[in-house]
Structure formats: C-alpha cells, structure tokens
Image 1 (spheres, rainbow, N blue to C red):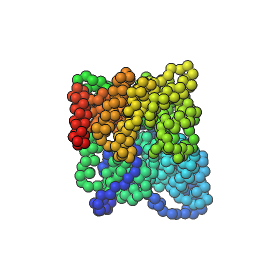
Image 2: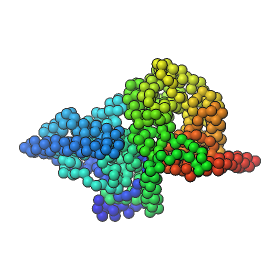
Image 3: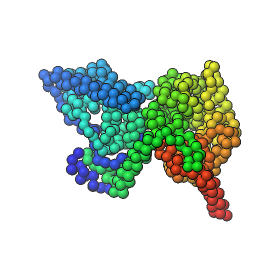
Image 4: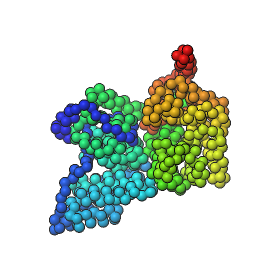
Length: 555
C-alpha cells in the first residue's frame, strides 16, 4: 500500500462496480488487493531443485493447517461454534491426500514453483467440486481456492499480518474472513456467492461483503480509497468526498448500535406506553441465528430454505434438508423458529425447474412427494423448537389446507407445528380473511407485495414506498384479518426495519417484526422509543390523508 496507489485514487470521476450483497453494512478505506488474475510470474524449477521445492510446498500446507486450527480455537473460545466448525474443515482440506498428490505432480513433473503449484492444485480441486451436483460440496470450491492462495502465500514467505481497509480478492475462504475480520472494514470479491461459507462468516461477524463484482474489481489499485456498500451490493472507486463522509458516519453508527444492542439484549421490545412486540430475525444460516440471538432476537421469523439448493438438479431429499436445518435450529431450542417452505421460482429457479411459470407453494403442490419430503425434514429437525411452517406465495385458503393434509401424512404421531401463510401478493391480501381462517399466523412479505402493487422490479421494491396508500391498504386489510381470526401477524420484508415504515406498521397493529440479524438491536431500540398510541393515530391519519389526496386528485 504505497503513495502511488493513493495518488491514483484521486484520478478520474467516481465509478460504480455492481455485485451482489452478501453481508450488510458500509465500509470506507484504502483497498488492500490480495490477488489479481495473471499476477503470478511464470517460472520453471530445475529438476535438481524440485525435491526442496516440494518440501516447501508441503511445509506451507502444514503451516496453514495449524493456522486454521488456531483460528477455529479462537472462534470456539468466543462462543462462535458454527464458524469454528467451518474453519476446522479447512484444516482438514489442507491434509487432503488428493491435494498433496496434485501438488507433487505439478512440482516434480512440471517444475512449478511451490506457491504456484499450491494455487493451481487447489484450483483443480475447486473446479471438480464446483461441477458436482451436490450443493454442499460445490460450496467448498471457494474454500479450497482460499486454502491454495493462503498456502501459496506461506510458501512465498508471506506470513499473516494486520490487514486493515477494504479487502479486494477474487475469492475468500471462511478462515480468511475469520482471521481478517478484526481489522478489515469490508470485503469485495470478484466471485463468491451469498450462501458460500465466507459470506456466512462475514454476516456472522458483521463484516460488510459484496460478491460477484467480476474481474473488473481486481483492477482496483493497492491504496486506492474506496467505499463499499454491503446493503446495495456495490463498491465505489474514486468516491466523492460526500460519499466518503457519509460512509464513515454510517459505519460508526452501526458499530455503536451493535454494541448497544448486545448490552441491551435483555430489555423487552416495548413501546414507551407499554405495548409489547416480538422482534424476530430473518436468516439462512446458523451464523445469522447466533448474531440475532446476541442482539436480543426472540427467535426466527423467516428461515429461508431455498438458497442452498439453487443449483440443485432435482428436488432435495428429506435427509439432506434435515442435515441443513439441524445446525441452524440447534441454538433455538424452546424458541420460535419460522421456516419457510422452498420458495423456488422467479429469480430463484434451480436448473431442474427452468421454464416453470409457478412460484413457491404452487410449484410444491405440483410435486407432492417433494412437499412431503420437506415437511418431514422440518418436523425431524424442529423437534426442540417452537416450529412454525411458513407457506410462500399463497393465493388461496385451499393451498393451506393442502399443506396441512400433506403434513398430517408425515407427523407419525408427533405434534403438528403451526402453519402460516405469506401474504405477498395483492390477491392474497384481498383474500386475507379467508386465508387467515386456515392459518395459525400470517406473515407479510412487503418486498414482493410492494413490487406487485406498484409495478416495480424486485431490487427496487426493497426501497420502494411501502407507505404508498395502495400498499398500506393491503397491509391494513391483512392485519385486520389476522385480528378477526385471533392469530398474530408478522412482517418479514425490508419494511420491518425501515425507519419510516416501521412505526406505521406498528401503528397498524402488527404483532411481530422479523428483520435482518444485524438489525435486530436497532429495531428493538426503535420500538422502545415509540409511543404506540401516537403511532396508531399517525397510521390511521396517514391512511385517511392519503385517501383524501387521492380522491381530490381523481376529482
């Protein structure tokens, strides 16, 4: 990180590189570029020196295995057992005989330097894993690449040091994230995925991460000042001064908010005038569950089950789903755990469903064996939690009855979990009264609901005006339907943590808010600062005022 890089950072207008949000938060700082395409010099080791070079490569793998074991030990001491398990798997990879054999071939037969042989052998292993149909093994591809890069660095004499700023790399493994998170402000990856282990660890440790930025991000210079927005999934090169100041202020605000959230996690989420709400978390991994509980979440309001299976070649079998769910649900013993059925379709369509026009429960009802397989997995994995099954993209009460019929076939004498519907389409909201009579709870998916009502694409709907009268009327109708049926109504969309929309939702009478794990504490604190009576009056007044404005404009 030298002065030339810093100077280059001031040249040219602001540029935006777009990727995918993998871990929320904002970071600002100098870029630390860990690797680049084509950065390694081609070189051939003379035959007489190859045995010594192979010894160097083997020693590097031993060093990396020891490093990973130490990282895992520190994580375990800190109570972060799921992350420790992930990192320990990396230590086992370092001792893989197949990897060692590939390294030996590359060094002894091809004359590759130790560092290059380690990276190339790891890449070959990763390519094989990535091509497998098993999503669990395919996810390990980035972990293996990370192992190869780490071992290559050790073979070149580069030992781990204190790295600060925004890390830029082609990929990162979970051990890299765990080791570097203490000082790194954020992480920007050319590749990677939101369900990869590196992203899971980043979310758990509160490190902003953007993945899928493409090779262009590897052109960022060492020392160049950048702003990384983990919420929007972008990185800004040559950021304007106003953006830098805003990013620094936001990063500081989030850091202080998390410290306060952990300190106040035992205080109830209760308004100043005594109205109690239940604050739950949205999650897709054990790491997010742990973070949510640390910030005071009372359970999980939305556990997404489809993200791990987006590359599947067939409906996932029951045993595989249960093995995925068990470690996520383990910390939730005795607490509410709301697990959504596979929400395939739209922008989440796996290869075996390509061309299908349905979404969510519609697709599952067309595959009754797959529905029963998932329900069996949920009942098996959720025996120690207050299990709630959430049915996605419901449009009719008949769909809820069909899920209950399928559930009865797999209970085998066990108690039936609660069943609820996601209200995320205008049709469902209009039929909320009938749907609520078949449910134990309702959950408002405000992202899709807003998108469909206002005609926006899904990405824009995340920040769309939920406070638009057309959307609020449907939310209000759903809450009223829940009250009439005597069941709780939850909000699990982005609006649940939006500073403008959340008080209105509370005023309309929702019972639960389910938010991103990193935002649980902030929302709980916001609830404690609200006056419920004032929120209720403001919500009703807002509905009336907007309706009057709309009538005036139409007149």
